[in-house]
Image: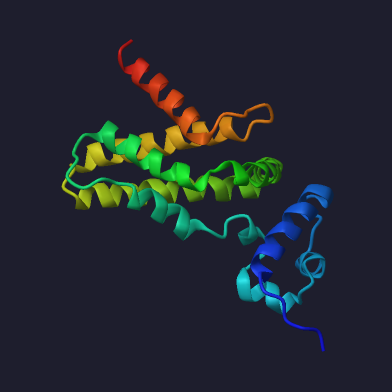
Length: 186
C-alpha cells in the first residue's frame, strides 16, 4: 500500500493550474487534476467543491487579511484604504507572483472565472463596508472607502501580475494610491 503524502491541497492547486494553462480551463477535468497530483478524485473533493474553487480557495483568508488590517480608532476613510492595502500586501510577496500571474491568465481566458473573480472582490467590498459601519463610520463613507480600497487593490494587482512588472506589491499600491489622491486635487 502506498504511503500517504501530505500537502494534497497544494499539489492539487499546482496540478490544476498547470493543466489549465496547457489544456485550458474547460478542457481539464477533476479526474485529470487528481491524477496529476497523485491523489484520487475523492481526495480532490475533500479539499475543493469543484475545479473552479482551486483558483478561489482562499476567499476567507483573503477577506480576513483585509479586515485585520483596519486600524482601531481611525475615521479617516483614505487612511483606512491605505491601511487595508498595506495589510493586503502581506498576501502578495514575490514568492507568489508567478502563481498569481498564471492564475490570472487562466481567469482572463474564461468568462465564468472572470465573473467569479468579480464576485470575490464584490464580497470583499461588502465585508469591508460592514466592518467600517460597525466601527461607526457612516454607511455612505464606509461604502466609498470600501469600494475605493477594492478598486485600488484591483488596479495594483493587475499591474503587479503584468509580465514585465518587477516592483513589489507595496510599491505599486503606493503609486496607485498616490495617483488616486492626485485625481482628488484636479
